[in-house]
Image: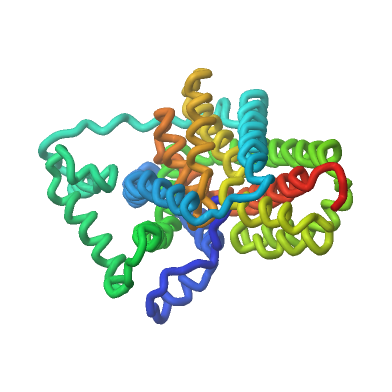
Length: 414
């Protein structure tokens, strides 16, 4: 969720019996179950477990198709609905951009110095050879899943891809067919709601993708690759700690608030961010803590906590930068400075408006990986630890919101 998703969000469908009980388990719990069962299946089946990676490839193909229009709709909606005004509005974008740049720089620096994925020996998959006919029906099916939502409408000529897109939007819009559209904002909201509804369907099968990828890797490669995840987790925690220290230093010298008072006054928001993994759900608590417990001016608290939260996802941007380098190191792929700068640019753009997207980190990560040519099929490997790191980076996102509010309030107490 990314960090910003509510993990308990489920598809509103009248499930019964075993399926209903499965849906009641939080997403991170389902992912952990998928990891355990995938490891067991990999040990049992050995190299024969390679075919189980197919669900993961399908899920990532769908995420790759959905990510660009979803990010586009989220950014458009954010800029249309966010009300910026007053003397503090001019300072807000500069503070948000600075925090995000520092976060990504910290992430890339720690990943380059520690190199958590080095020596894991994970072999990149061979690129699929596109042929007109294939003996494997599953491969043929996946090849007909569109790589982008608008791709089937272009020159690729895959009519099945058009059917995929039509069925998905037809189902998503069934309950919205009577919604009145009086303004452009209503239309953008409808598009965003429809895309998020489709995303929920994809997220529902993410645990199956994790099961298949883990089983495939354990069956063919063993557990060596997963040992590197421990170093990766420690590296991300180190980077997030450095980012938190940067926030406190900036607050100390850029506002009247003392760092200790900020931590004490904002602890409820930080704890809620960690427990819910959603900065969106934490926004009211963050605002109340800044205004009532820390004593910031109302405009400063609202600009940082309510407006800034839609644009400020420093922890997520830091994590995605580190995740890209981690996977590159695992497969022995050296990312040039140009590619790392592309990670910075993509992470900044993808983080804007991500607060309202469930599992935002998973969605935007596909864009970051694609931008630098990393194979997205290894993203499920990260999901084995993402449920924990998601909570940590969400707390940093909220701490970044509090940092911005304090800096906007200035050095003199109002």
